Image (cartoon, helix red, strand yellow):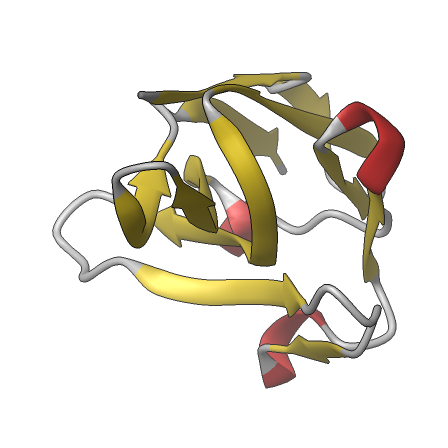
Length: 119
């Protein structure tokens, strides 16, 4: 019904930057909140940043001041600008979207994109 496709991950040195993108497509009536989560090896998936349909944002304490989430509603796309990357930011990053379709409202997840920060 809805597909989320992430891009922009990769390998970067500590202190560097990356920009993740996540485009939603399918039978979308409305996208509510969108967000980015991450999961490092051996750890639980955690919220990194989220943005509502009204552009209110919230961030994990560990990324405040370094990461910025934004969205382009015309493109059904959410972005995560990551600056000042640290080795502890290394994880698989997943896009999440709360979407209403003709079949109802539910959460959707992307396939994940690897971010690796070398020291």
